[in-house]
Image (cartoon, rainbow, N blue to C red; front, side):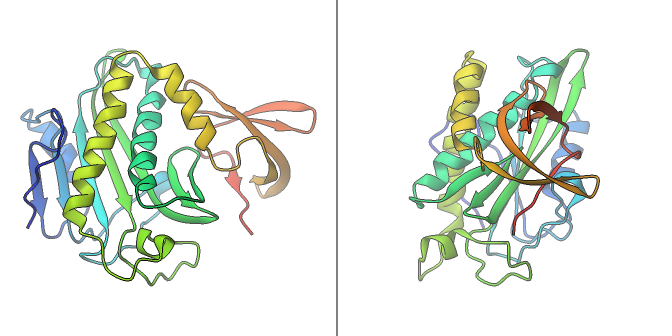
Length: 255
């Protein structure tokens, strides 16, 4: 179905297309286990039956309407303690790709969901394999709502809905562009631009520098996102205190 010609050095040059599969991340992980994984290989499906996101959440997607792709990378230049830098680079790549089609409201909800206004367009699930104190392989799973116009969850949105386009986008073309944008930021990261990327990421973070409601252990509080730590922890001002939250410790209250 897909005949890719992305303008990249390596990302997307080797493509595995499956009409249907349970999880592209699982397929990519199986490829890595065979020890025949090429850096930059991407696994694509038109129908993912058991896709998952952060915290084990399921992703609602209809066949042949959205982008469901997993990318195999070898970021052995990153120490384990630096692994969130990869999340930042990937999020920036997705953001830049979507900015070609959207002019307003696009943000990255910590750690790496893609939002338009208060509605979710997609997300990223990165699963790393370690070798000592460094990353050996990373499977970067990306799910983006593109052409779907009906969702059971009213907090979901697609690119077609957000851009008010009357016709479907061509998924093959979009995935090529996505690969090009992510490779750009990945190579920047590899060349030592992690700090500059973090600054750019914070500028795009959903609710950054604003007071909003959050929830921890069933209790709501007012907080302001002020930073993201190297390991990816969310740094927030809560009253007069500065607190650090892990990925599963705090949730956003979106009303």
